[in-house]
Image (cartoon, rainbow, N blue to C red; front, side, top):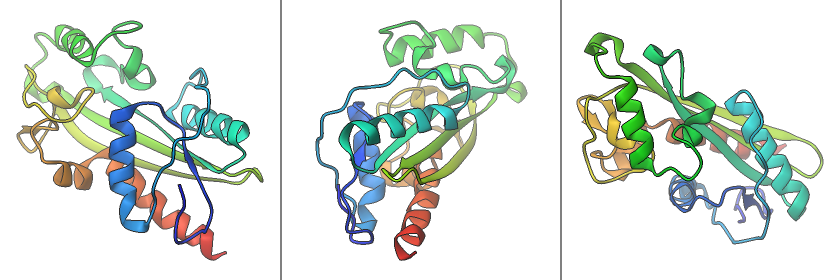
Length: 199
């Protein structure tokens, strides 16, 4: 991708099509467009969202020679001690679908009263540059876990994560981008990227 602000090309360090679409949509207003460049995924061995985002960004940057943007995000449920956290994508085992991860989460939340179903989505963005410099940003969206999936939109845990009475799978994309952890993280990242470009 290339930005009007930096005049540089970037690579988006994810092969997740849904995440790529959301990232591109949110970053489009500052002139960012993405191009497909080959890179291999790196194992997410970090214990925090920042560590995993940094691992992915640095690996894609090293492989392509271009600045690379990566995000790591997940769901933290208070009644489960912060789980699934950094293991959100692997929560129901390798190859599990979003529906299967939601089913496992709801099973583990059975009997938990409404006042204890609080949760938050967390997203950390990391942009790694070939010269070793980095830009990072974080976004958090507070909500709660419903008792059954609702809505047809979104992806991941969106059907069971609720804000203001609606699941993220029921909220239009434009509204979700404003409220979501990823939208907040990317808004902060966009500002930092523009500040970096002016240096």
